[in-house]
Image 1 (cartoon, helix red, strand yellow):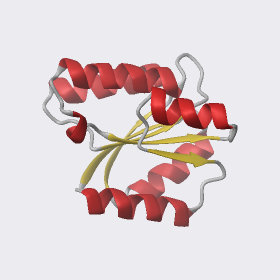
Image 2 (tube, helix red, strand yellow):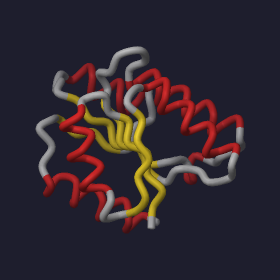
Image 3 (cartoon, helix red, strand yellow):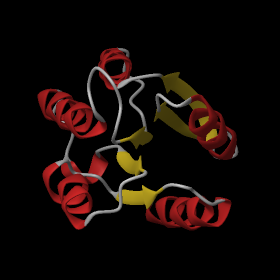
Image 4 (tube, one colour):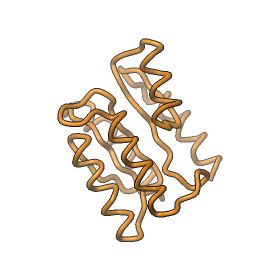
Amino acid sequence: MLKILVVEDELASRKFITHMMEAYGHCDIAVDGIKGVIMFEESMLNGEKYDLICMDIMMPEMDGQEALKKMREIEKKHSILPKDEAKVIMTTALSDPKTVLEAYYKGGATYYLVKPISTDKIKNIMADILDSK
């Protein structure tokens, strides 16, 4: 079973994503990027790192791009090799190419989903993640 962190500010999306992800492991929930980064760092300090992060890009306080950048810095600080980094599914209502490129290349996202998110899209991504383990 995977250890999963869901970082989503919007209640309906948070509930939907958490419900879908619970089939694959234990889900912890953060309602914004700042809380997500704090929970991520605490998991590293406790030796219980997350396998998967599902995170919205557009959030108050700290957006998903910035949160992911900080999470990747935390992994580096803890000497996590790139192949062992947490997989990241970034979600957003925005589908412009600039956002997609930033999520993939600048932030180190593994997957990118445009809302509304379907169960089939999540199942396909999870099959890919589980195959790569």
